[in-house]
Image 1 (cartoon, rainbow, N blue to C red):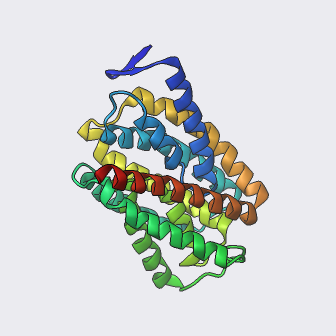
Image 2 (image 1 turned 90 degrees about the vertical axis):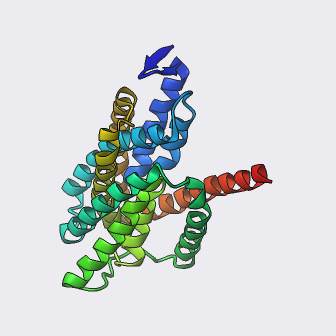
Length: 267
């Protein structure tokens, strides 16, 4: 039994968390949505509060998003004219969202997120060539303003809840701005790094982060993110699209289960 900041962990729980961090880093690097794996694993830890789990998840995730951002930058060369304003706006949104995370019950948002994800999945499946090639929309300042607006909205969600942020970033870059899946994933990693940083700007001073646990998850995320980013670059947009559809489907099932359980328990 190991004690980390008054949280008791046995050896199997540590192994489970590290495996979750590794898998989360890989999924996040390819299409986003690693929080679907890592955050529920943290919530299984005895004695950890939901806010501590969310904050510690951000610390682990930021290591993974930093790793995949660098890997994508070197191998894909994402458009920083889109990534820059989107990341700055997302950072601000994440700070605001994290501040609200202690005030607003997450249950209020899950049905809405579930409906949005279902729409995303149907939209993606109905357009089999979506994201296969770049078909950029708007130019110049108009393009950057739309990117910033998307970053602000999704950054606020990431600070507030988190799971699926990378998925929302990828689909917004593909369906709204017109990127193919591989460069969309590369830009999404830079923006996701900013949202994680924004959330931590609030969570760290508030004392919600469990540092030893978060750094251990960060190490696992680093390995998973490096492997995932390299695989995505090697296999291209079609591979990223397949993983994207799979992750969105799993996220829908997960959130659907949570919403149904809450409804049944409330009756």
